[in-house]
Length: 179
Image (cartoon, rainbow, N blue to C red; front, side, top):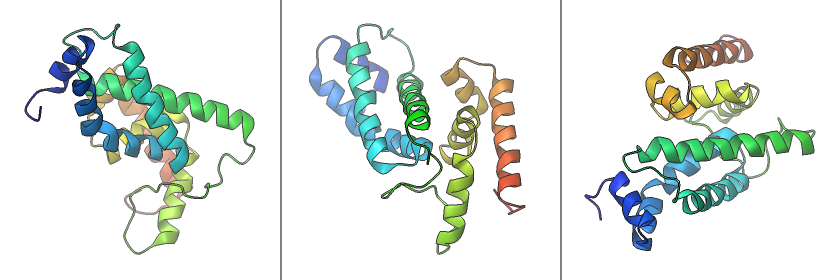
């Protein structure tokens, strides 16, 4: 199923082909996990959210519309799961900004764990909408049009969220270059 598109695989899965779901999971699990880990900054929670995301794909297959681009649809599910978990975590955990043991890190300059930690901490201080826009644009390489489609907003709004996130990161990082 290597040359079959994600959309065709999802159509096959909707028709009851479970191997198509397995192929989609194999293709996307790593990327979705990376996205979730950067959003929630907690490796075990990201793993749980990965499972929740793909369980939601199974449950939502009856509502999947043929022709819908699969990756944005999947990442919308993942982003919503991350947002829900972060809201829950903020209510339950008074130490939401502390890095849990086993946290998955954000890419940063090699060989400088202090800088990496500083960037991770700053990223976690952004509002969820800004963090999501920054992670998707800078770390996942998405265009603002793709982010807008994912969130159901205009491209200008996605650009504004990311820009505000970049500005806040610059402020939090005290003028570090390439923040």
